[in-house]
Amino acid sequence: MIGTINKVITKIIGAEKANKISQHKRLCFSYYKDLSLYSKHSIIHSLDTPNKIECQLILYYHSIEKGLLFKNTKPRFAKRLILNIHPLLSDESIKKLVNRSQVSTAYRVMCQYYELHQKLGVDIEDLFTKEQYEGYKSILSTNYDSDFHGAIDYTKDEFYSFTDSDFGQFSNSRKSIRNFTGELVPTDSIKNAVQIAINTPSSCNRQSSKVYLVEDKVKIDNILAIQGGVNGFTDNINQLLIVTVDRNYFFSIGERNQFYIDGGMFLMNLLYGLHFNKIACCPANWGKVQQDEDLLDDIVKIPESEKIICLVPIGIAESEFRVTLSKRRDLKEVFKQI
Image 1 (tube, one colour):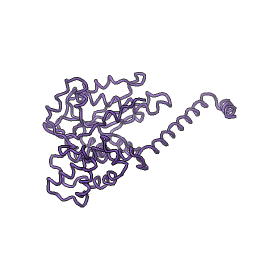
Image 2 (cartoon, rainbow, N blue to C red):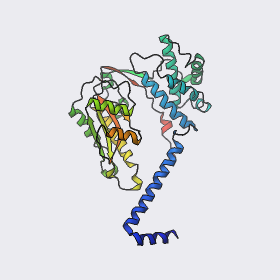
Image 3 (spheres, rainbow, N blue to C red):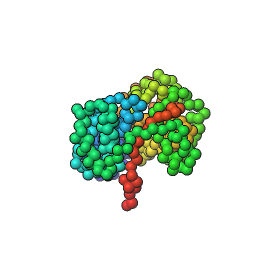
Image 4 (cartoon, one colour):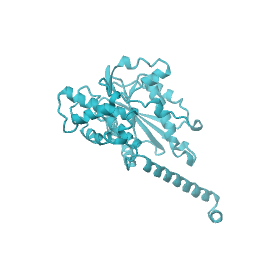
């Protein structure tokens, strides 16, 4: 019956138009399925699985780590995060997962937060009690480490000491830096980093990624204000890379999300290229809604066909700086044989 109807419609409006309608319907259905799965399995609507709770824990503890980067740590920083993370760390399903790398790190970051304030002689009993602190240490058990640090100190020379090492050491040495001198990176060095990224594999070698360099300080500050993830570190950010992917280079409904994959691969190689050229950088996630895209469009004009993948503030690193621990998952949590 449906086949007969389609034949009649095709005869009336023509094969080309009928095919376009059919493709549009398939595209709408595919995007609707994407929407349904994301709505169900992300943490937008609920924290109803241990993995979702772990996701929220990571978001919270990593923000606390960033607060530890400042040389003169402001007492009682991240008050809202501290209050919000306690109920998650008290969840019985999370306590059972304390041997997971990220869950363990969340407890340890919280212990460091409490111990830091004890050293400073600052009372935080209203937002973090001694009983809670002792409880977290008890949950950690042998995972507790009094020497744990959520932020790591580096000198510039130490940080770049592995840029000429084997790839394993080189890759492990790359970290996000937020402490810049304000000095401009030479354009040729930036081009060298982009040239490395150009070697990134892409779908059918279509090479759809683009990199825009912004050096207008007012525009940079306005763009980063929309992004919101590097607040407190923007004073010496005088150069910004915007990584995009052009939708014009994708042809099928099955490729509706391929540009994120190609763009992500390009971004990673770009970060390696920057690190190899000793350019400090901190990729700033562009997980934004359309209203934010419109605000950015008022600041810098990027073709409508291009999707922003990431913002990358770049600069010259200070002689001494801190980076977040950003604990990596254990191999057993990532690699599965099936």
